[in-house]
Length: 266
Ligand code: ZN
Ligand code: FE
Image (cartoon, rainbow, N blue to C red; front, side, top):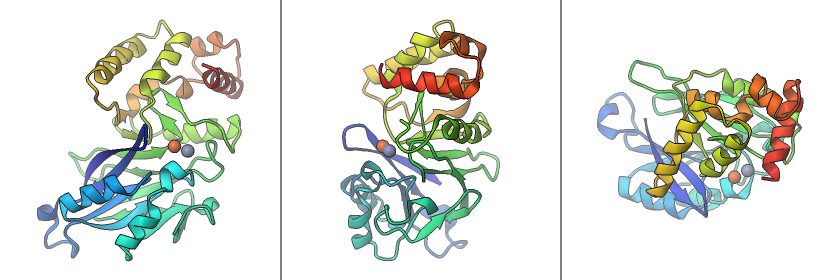
């Protein structure tokens, strides 16, 4: 499975999952198929599908915000057979939703299976899709919407700090070499904030330099690696002593809440 990153709106990414036709011939009937994660808008998706001559078979939505579902309707018109997946709690909020997913559910695309992880916090219904590696040479792929950003996390629109810590804990337990496909290019600003709290973190300094160089060249910083996030992202480090002392808290949820509040005002 190939993941293709498409730019959309001002800073969104849409991810197109595509299977290499030749490799799957004989094992699967549909040979040139794609699925899309969080189509913010239809045009970039339709354009890439035309280039690939691929059929769109699924939309995987992480949550109901318009910059994640804005392309659903148009894509369904073009590909009436496709299936729209989203979280069970999002019933009534995702255009065209047909499948209502809960923690632990599995969804298939071509020869890969994704595990659904329920991660309320940014919204009360948010889910992420995790494709574990199934054979050697494959990497784990995490499509995390607006729950985890590189260097940051989603704002708490419909959830509490307790819920978000619980949700991010689930993500933090995945393997370090998981590729993290975040839905927005917020990395540079996130890392400026992270450095303001955690300036002695040498992994963070190194990652910041890398990200700055990427952005100076106009390149994307997504996907990130979960191992890098665990070492640098303040929103995965609520229990780390240096972060806790930077925000003057000793409790995990209180530290997280304070870091989130500071980021909201950064
Ligand atoms: Zn959102
Ligand atoms: Fe968003």
